[in-house]
Length: 204
Image (tube, rainbow, N blue to C red; front, top):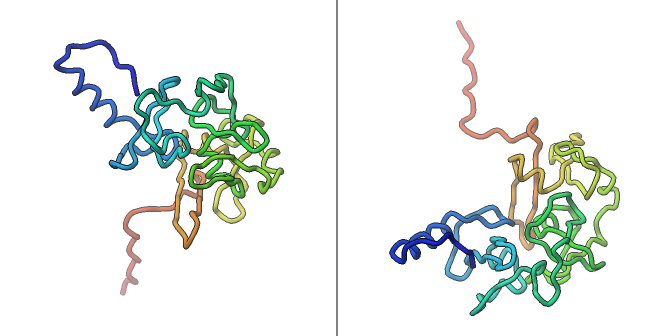
């Protein structure tokens, strides 16, 4: 649910629909919605997320207000901070050691998992290489959080997941048999797209 500026009755419904059509999910960065996977808005912070992307309490559309885990009236955490990046706010879930982590960070940092994958609840950091906390993001240069690295072999550039998204780095999701491979490339190693150049024909 989103609070919109006051307007005439005639245009209120149209404006509300237009807002929802232009909203993008904070996790997948897509704005498309399906009947069984709409974008919900947190009544506490206006966070926009797809039902499937956020999981948990977002899976069923509530009759009344909907709150993300961070704004839940029964356990509000206005000062919650992601332990995997320095970005404030966003779509977060509790970790198994009672910290907070962005769902997006949990998806992209290797070997971070969910205790309940279908609901994306219980972010488990126990399988993650602790040395990621020692990497410095090449984009924001802040030492806080855990970084991922460029997919290109021998490239050591590191960045927070949220920094990679905000700087429009090339981020790919590829479905395997029973899992999804997440890959990111720095600007120097961004995969080339478009038609391949023709080989020059020998002269003479």
